[in-house]
Image (cartoon, rainbow, N blue to C red; front, side, top):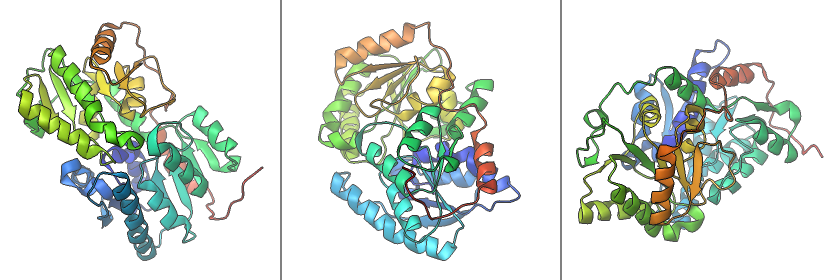
Length: 377
């Protein structure tokens, strides 16, 4: 199940390994914002990579508020229940912690289909924290991304024989880029986007800021602080559109308004990129700014400086590439300057070693799956 733009990069190498494994058959279901053009239309990249899509599920309700999130999830349960009934899979794989992933878990587990959860056990902010751990309790097999996460899943009472530290498949992609980091394309020429035709060749920063679902009412003023800081610094900037979450209309509205009123000459805006291209853009940047988990995961492996703003990645295990700050123009400016000149950032492999996808496929092929489980304490 892939339900959103970031979920694809989180699972891509595992999908390839499953597809190529002689004992496995891949049935790929794409749902949610991964099908929507305004959130990057990830399905186009998935099909371009050669995957056959078994089902497409349109389930996102307009609103970008907590009620529309709840209704989207409810619609997802109904639609996915029918999809799984038709496909009759031997197991269903769900990824991480996005709010709609709980729909996958409910639709599968309630129909006695073994549920496999990738990237459980981690700590983060907003609704993702609750959803991730709820997915863990519904899941039968756990493929976590770090040793810290594994220990947390075990403390939740899961069977040790069904918990594996596989690392994160997104680190597989980062490992490919680490070994071949050349930015071999012009981002604006290849992906279009909107905004100024910035002169990025001599150095640039990247911004990816999403709303925090438990703080959605402040999404607009939060991103305005980042916009003002980046505009003030006048460094060429590639800025990416937010995810579909409560508050994303506030974030995107603020971006549009700032673009129209200030016409920043140093910022170019994109909806999405192919995962490998995005990582090439990151590894060649001066810094990533915002609150995306890519700053915590892939950027730690690549050694990319990161300014993490706000609570979205609250208490998440991180490396020394990350500097945390608050939604304040002056603090953001100070933090960006700090990261750009930092010379002590090193690559760390907290979330994997570059071989997670094949490891996941092998575990799926060799593990006897069941939909029965009992808490172990």
